[in-house]
Image 1 (cartoon, one colour):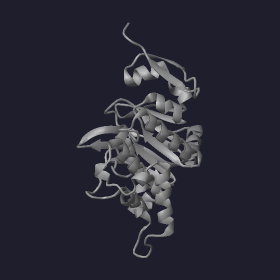
Image 2 (spheres, helix red, strand yellow; image 1 turned 90 degrees about the vertical axis):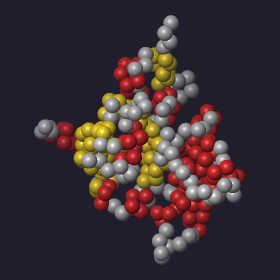
Image 3 (tube, one colour; image 1 turned 135 degrees about the vertical axis):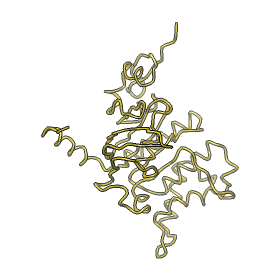
Image 4 (cartoon, one colour; image 1 turned 120 degrees about the vertical axis):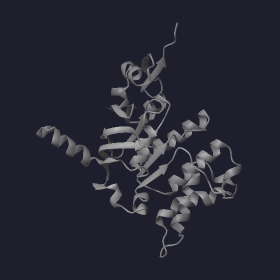
Length: 275
């Protein structure tokens, strides 16, 4: 399909404003096609949240953006270059990834696990520095895990472990963070605490991409939402513009009404009952 001059210029503008994007990628998992011809731009400096029903390809897209999964067609571009052209430590200094499930080595303390976030900066020439120590301390303070530093990870609750994994990603100190269901295992107070932290990081200039299940959390904290269904992007943009009752029913099969969140003045999804 031939693009018009306006479409070409628009595409150039998007790519200039994006450090991370996909070009017509096809993603397969266990020989099953998850997404086909998928093109997604992550606006630089945005807090982007990917939403959609279970099994729609949200986490698969995030893993592909992080270079954990290789598309069978198309490419991922990072700072204008194919992500596959970078060495793994180069990618890890640009992108921090919090996967959906992580396993810590047996008998490792919280402080030592968080210190693993500094791995991309280590080499035979550059060993542990005061800068690394400061990054770990800062990450623990931001996630309220300082008091857990000497405890073993395998003796923590699910919520505590989740905050420790987030701290490890923050210790990596990358300009872009990819977060796969970061509020898993957390009670509502810690969910909001973590989302507020992500909001602060975004306001400090970091680009965040997160997979969230709670549509109202996504609408409150994101400034860019990617709504997916069956491996394809159904809508993308400002939640105030794209979250409508029609979209929620199309993507989730849920009848609802949309009202203004009285606190954040963002869309609030209110499901309709059967009665």
